[in-house]
Length: 228
Image 1: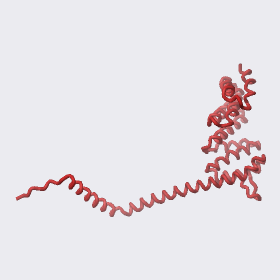
Image 2: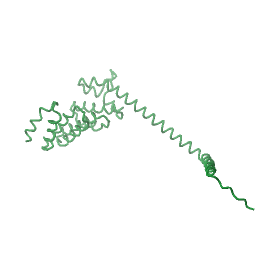
Image 3: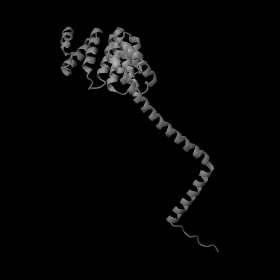
Image 4: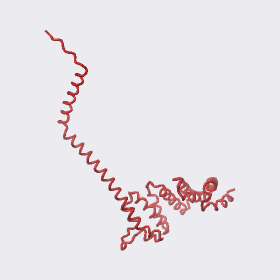
């Protein structure tokens, strides 16, 4: 005679499934433990590599900052060739070598701007523009300087409209940049010389409205008179 099966409670069914899941998991682990350990090893190595890279980047950036501070006296003194090449006797690394070694760090990116300025001051615009174009840092004042540097190159090449566009971009990178009035003025002058009178007029008017205390303010009316 068949006996009536006992109806399992929800709790018993749940416990039974947990036991089944446990044994299935244990079986899966035994069959695949080599792969699992290999996968975990890859994760550990990747995390360690990322930590090392971030530490390395920080160290590189700090070192670049120290080296730039040493060469800045030469730069500020107007010895632009000396700033580019450095001084081995004084153990001062030049900006060109700083960029070569640390150019991917934030301070290395800053060194590109100073290096470009040195070449520009030495009358080497082709060398200068390479480093202005290469700047890819995150600091607004240097972003604007890089754009303005490219603008000065286009002005030198008599590409006035392009120069104006880059000066205008430079003036819009940050609202707090002390150079904004000068960048706007240069943009307006280059538009004026390119024959783009409406753009020039609008920018000269911007200076009159927003930069009344700037050094370039006194020059605006002369251009506006020519444009009217």
